[in-house]
Length: 306
Image 1 (spheres, helix red, strand yellow):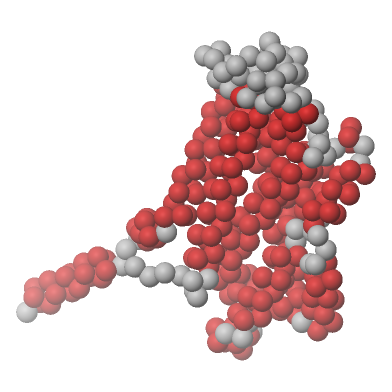
Image 2: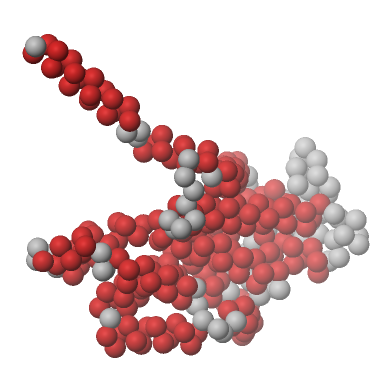
């Protein structure tokens, strides 16, 4: 009898282990079901590998003017060719993608962090604090962000514009979206039963925020971060294309702006604007696909089942 019972328990344990797949298995199943997220992650991984390998193999000096022969078409020596100013476009692409990533992550991270902090304070504590934060967001939201960024960037001395400066220009109004989204989620979450139980158990406000509410909002925060990175990269791109970025730096938008200024297509230098344009399409496309996939993961209303 003991042997039968033990065997039955072992079989039940084995059945439970089979019925409860691990986190990696669930992730792979979700990626298989959500093709957009999987494609976005693959494209982003390819771009990261291109940039990482490039940073280890290129000569960074060749990303700046007067480093190589000018106006050379793509070849074995210069796979992406060179431009009018004597830059190796492969080196410029690698450095430009790295700088774009710095702007995107820095501006996206700051915007998301400010939004999360203000959203939690507004929703959890309420009262006049909630009224002030909500009112400021409602006033600033209708303002065209592009116009403000163009005015601020255009008013600065070009010698003062750096990669870090661009990130702060982009992040100026980037915190409003995450603030409103996190505020709405916290308002819903703090009425849940587990929060009421935590309050009755004597858990402090900070304990409830960090141990009870915040872990449940991580998918929303991740989706907000990716959305902010997308907005920051797009903003840095169009500001640079307008000639409002750090002109000496090989940002992707700067390469396109310089090619436009020198009439690259009209002069037959077709390779000059092609590579940065394709890179920006891939970057923005991958971030958009990842953002949509994370939004589906975070939003139960649009989440699909197997």
